[in-house]
Structures are given as structure tokens and as C-alpha cells.
Length: 286
Ligand SMILES: C[S@@+](CC[C@H](N)C(=O)[O-])C[C@H]1O[C@@H](n2cnc3c(N)ncnc32)[C@H](O)[C@@H]1O
Image (cartoon, rainbow, N blue to C red; front, side, top):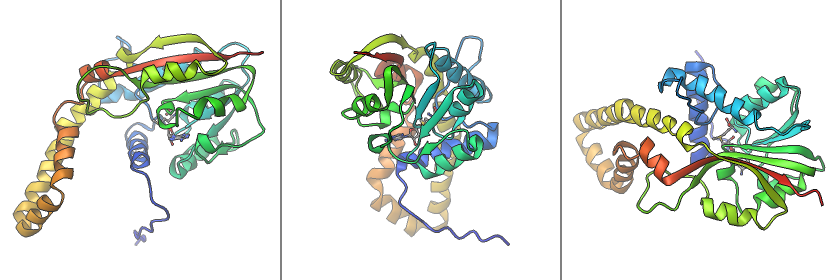
């Protein structure tokens, strides 16, 4: 019998758990290593089985905006390595940054020795190497906005580019149960302080929002029934424990119900509270 004992080597951040879960799910059901929302076009019906196709379209969309002449790329927050693999297949020379040991190991397993993976947060990256292009594929939101451009410029060749594809918070009023993203206004303000020119800025909120509809569907039709079943089971079998859990974790349980099962994590709210954009910046060669 296999030893199923788990030893906790280091505390794992809750965002990392979410990403690792996404990887386990994508790999098991679709053999996919992508960890982003996908790019949904009208000819791809919104269904979980079409997620891998939408995700391939997303990387193709990013690749189609790589400027001519780019040879070397740094893929920051490379996840499980799917984009880096595609880029090496197109003869770009790619290195990657990953602060998450689980994802870095997965990326190494599919990239072999084709890429060097710096296992660190981007904010702490230190290398003498420089690149023609630095890509942030849905990883920009995790990086300290006060440090990200200064760091990126350190590793860019003269006249190099930064490509960001990620979502930002809009200024819409009201409470959103959808977390994540830097404020879009702060992003543009911060950009102005650096020798960077915005060459392309495309709003792809509409093409990425269907992912939220899929997640919402899964939460409503899979997550909520399983969650309720668990409560019914514990309540029926262990009423005292059930009371204790309800009392001790009341606030947490209410927050989970509000955040995940109230139906407010939907595509309309995503389009209201978030702006998903591809932004390509060119560094000023002077
Ligand atoms: C949503 S995943 C996107 C993964 C991949 N780029 C993709 O498109 O499939 C976010 C990625 O950002 C990485 N990340 C989080 N914080 C980071 C940081 N401070 N510096 C660099 N990468 C970070 C995570 O480890 C993860 O790989």
C-alpha cells in the first residue's frame, strides 16, 4: 500500500492553493497546463469542454501581439509552463519566473531544459540577463505595482517591450465579490512615471468574461450541492460538532456563502467591475 502521509514542508499561500487546484483540474480533465481565463470567440460555445480551446486561443492572441524582431522572452508568472512551451515551439528563446514550487516543478516537467526557471517572486528577481520582451500572462495582478516596472526595465534590452494581459479593477460603484486586479487608473498613472510608450491597448473583457459564467455554473450546480451535502452529513451524524463548527466558524461560513454561492460572481458583474486588457508597452530606447 502506498504511504499517503503528507508532510507540510512550508506554508502554502491560499492563492497558490487555488492555482494548484486549477492545475490539477485542468490536467486531469483536459490534459491542459493553462491557468488563465481563455479567450472566447463567438464560434466557441461557452462550455467547460471548450475551455482548453479558449485557452489555446488566449495564448495565440498573446503570441499574435509579439512585436517583430523579438528573439528572447521572459515569461513572468509562468504557471505550469503552457505559454512558455508554445513560445519555444515558435523558436523564441524563453526563460520564466515562478514563485510557486508546485507550478515551477510542473513547468519544468513539460519544458525540460528548454527554459531556465527562476524560482522566485518577480519583485525579488536578480539576474544580469536581459530580454527583448517580458510577458505577464494573467500574472501582473499578483505583482507589487510599485515595483513591477522598475524591475521589468532592469531586464529589458534597449527598445524592448513589456506585454501585459490581465484584468484590472474598474471604478464601478458597489461591492464586488470578484477579487483581484490592480486598479486600472492606478496602472495608467504608474505607467506614466516610466520611460514606456503604450503601443497597443485592447479591451478583451467580453472575450474573457465567459470563464466567470463557467465558474459560476460550477459553483451553483456542483459546489453548492456538495457544500450543502457536507453540512447535512455532519449535522445529521454529529449534531454537537455541527453546532460547534457553526458557532466557531459562523463568519467564515457566511463569507463563503456570500462570496461563492450567492450567484454574484457572474459574467455581468465581471464586465462591470473588471477590465481585462492586453497592453503592449515599448521602452524608450534613449
Ligand atoms: C493565473 S496564473 C497564470 C499562469 C500562466 N501565466 C498562464 O497564463 O497560464 C498566475 C501566475 O502568477 C504567478 N505569480 C504570483 N505571484 C507572483 C509574483 N510575485 N511574481 C511572479 N509570479 C507570480 C503564480 O505563481 C502563477 O504562475
